[in-house]
Image 1 (cartoon, rainbow, N blue to C red):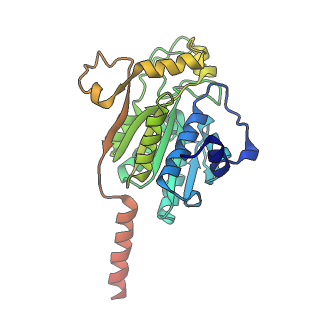
Image 2: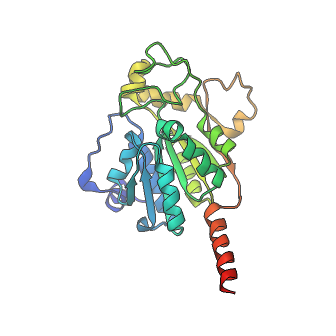
Image 3: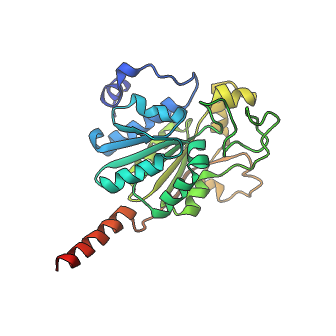
Length: 277
């Protein structure tokens, strides 16, 4: 395993550090889990393309030494799809926030999952729009406050993992920043999976979500992740009432299905052969 110094030297643009994330933000820990997963898989960093969305999570690529594309808001998976189709040999990872993926990018999200295209979607869910002023997002819990919901959100939140499952994703998992070693394993499994992989990471935003909801201590927010987490296996034995307020973590789906790029290439090969004959 790489030491922190070795990880920084190998995978980070050290001249760009320190980062701009707020004190207590989970994005830096998630970025580190990603590079450790990549390193354990033995992937050449020059064969990995990272697509970033807009928002706090979109800054990950500004500090990491991969080929990075900064997409427009909500379009990370559209860019990632094009890259994977044009260069199937690349490992493609799209990093998005909960709003970037679940709101403006929602249509791209469900169709990337439906197609089962071989890429990894990593969504950092801090339950709010953290970079643009603390607006409520599609994952803001019912009743929680934001700059656009000062008396509490009246919208029901998305369960992004269940949405991914319903749309046909063949690998779906959820982790937290507190359970960082488990998150590293989930990311490793997701990247190695042949098909559309979706990993949601429950993270903390002490500056906006925390401040609006009287949870401004990063340590307290991490403690909430620890105490609220329930494994997928344990959750199967609990009632919906018992799961209220809990975070179910682990692997939800891991299955083999026809993969879009492979099927598309097979179609090209077949008709190319027929044309040649």
